Length: 144
Image (cartoon, rainbow, N blue to C red; front, side, top):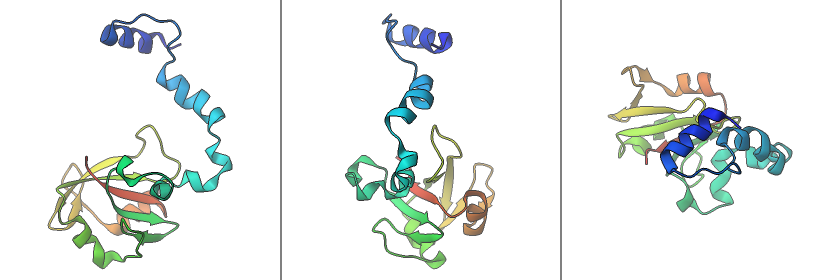
């Protein structure tokens, strides 16, 4: 057990229990054994989770790219010309990979100004730059 994790938990909760499992051990050791998502390819694609579970469990999906094709929250096929309209009611959004992700890896919070995306440094983020960085599978969600 990670002593640093246990110490932080003890300080924040006041509960001393040697049977508590650290999140890092659960996430990287136990969860992959119990939940073999690698053997079920459909479950690896996080942008499709709303087809299985209640949409209310997830942040609002604005744009999803699945295998190189882009869809809106209702799984209607969209093009670049639709992006501004889908983003217009938001000031910040979350961009993240929808495959081979976890633990916050490669997640970005982007600003939305006039239907355009910008990173935390104010640099414009284009559809092409997202596709280059994230490939054929990513999601843009409303910031909760």
